[in-house]
Image 1: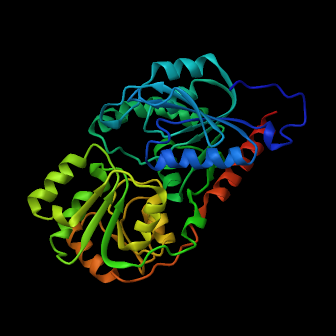
Image 2: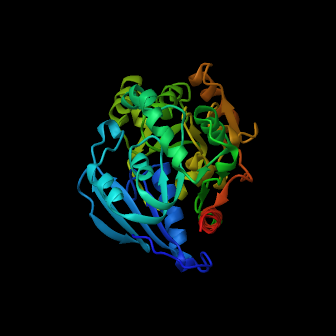
Image 3: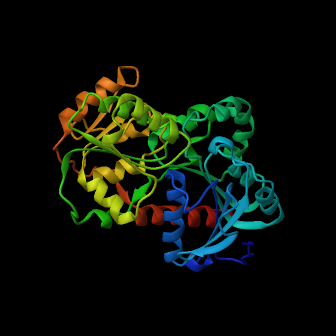
Length: 372
C-alpha cells in the first residue's frame, strides 16, 4: 500500500488513513499478537480506514493475498524453527521496495518488526508485545546479540504503544526509551460476547486457553490435577509443547480427566469460559493476557502467575496471583479449591476492542498531523 503526498491540512477523514500492519503471523493462526492485530485492523477498517496486513506463513499453505473482513492480508513465506524468528527474505524485500504512509509493526520477538524498521515509511509505530525474554531456547540464545539490532526498532519508532504498564516498564528499563515516545493502550476483548450467560457453571471444570508452550505453565496444571481428583481440565490451544503435555498426563494417570481441543468455534469458546469453575494461566511471560481478560469478563475466577503483566488483573479476591518461586503445583491446588464456585467481576482494565481501535486511530492521526 503506497503512500500519497498531501498538500496541506493533514488527515481530515478516516478514509485518508492508509495503514499497513506488519506482524509475524495473522488469522487463522492463534495467539495474543495475532488476535491483537486482527481486532484492531478489522475495527479500523470498519471505521473507514484502508488497512493492509503484511505477515508470514511458515506453512506455505495459506492464500498469498486475500481480504478478510475488509482487511487486505498479504502473506510471505518464512522460516520459523520452533515457532521462532520468522525470517522472511520476501517480506523484507517487499518492505524495502515500497513506501508506506503509516506503518505499524508488532512483536519485538520476531524479525518482521526489524524489517519494518528498515523500510521507508512516513510514520512508524511499534507495538513490541515485549516479554523481556523468550519462551524458546533458540530465541533466548539469540536474544542478547539481537538486542543490539532490536534497539533500532525503538530508535526508529515515532511512537511506541505498550499493551500494559508492566510492558512499558520493561521496555523502558531494557532499551532506555524516552518517556515521550510511549503510549499505553491496553489490549481489548469483545465485551458484547459476554453479555448473555449461555451455559451454567461447572465448579469442577478447570480451563486453560492459549498456545501450548512450556512457558505457559500447563504442565503445572496437569500436575495439580493429581491433587484434585474431583476436577477435570479442558485445554484449548495448540503448540510445540502439546506432545510432551499429553505424555505427562498419561504418565500421571490424569489423561482421562483432560479434554484436549486444538481449536473451537468462537461461540463454543465463550461457553467454555462461562462454564469453567476456574481459569488457570500460570504463564511466566505475558505482555497483557487476553484470555485471562476474557475469562474475567465471563465471570470466571482466575489464577495467574506473578511476575508478568498478568499481575495487573490480580485483586486477591477472584483473580489470585501465585509466586513463581514457590511450589507452583501446591499453590495452584490450594487456590483452585479456594476459588471453585465463585463469580468474578469484570475489572476496569478489561476494555472493548472498539475502544482500543479508537485510541490507536487517534494516535495515528496525532503523530501524522504533527509530522507534516
